[in-house]
Length: 206
Image (tube, rainbow, N blue to C red; front, side):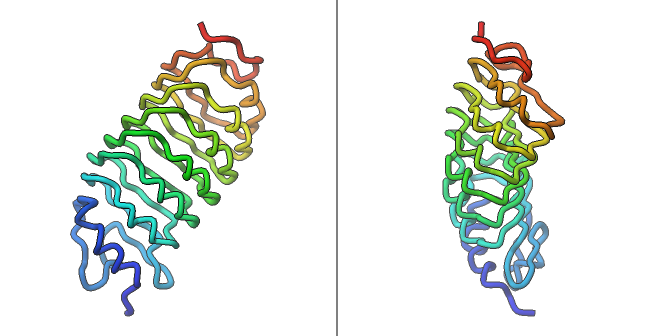
């Protein structure tokens, strides 16, 4: 079996990632948490990692799933993750990531699930996330995000779950969220904004 060229990339950042999984140096596709297809890595799961998220991950051009949940990752989310144009699922929740959410994530046009909950993220929710036309789940809860909920999120016609609870969001709830007809889960509790009523016109926060 030929070793995918992506394995060379993984060898460069595996130690930096602090993964609890032991990398198979002969063929990385045999490593627990790594899946390959047609000579490229398509899935990377490394729960319980520590350190920082290596920017070299952005070189895995065919990556569809990146799961680094429930670890001790620190530092910011690399803007270079926005180069992963094949990515469908991004799970970074349950770490100690800080800084703002990169606007570059709005370029992940195939993204279906975005989990960034339970970190130390700050700043506003990027309006660019409204460009994620394939998104079904947006989970940003239990951070320190501030500012208003961007009305651009109402463009996510296929959105089924919007979890923004336990942040520092303020201002009115955008009336446009009432246009999300496929929304099943909506949680805005634990913020500073108006009472939850997506059918309202959005009143000033108290």
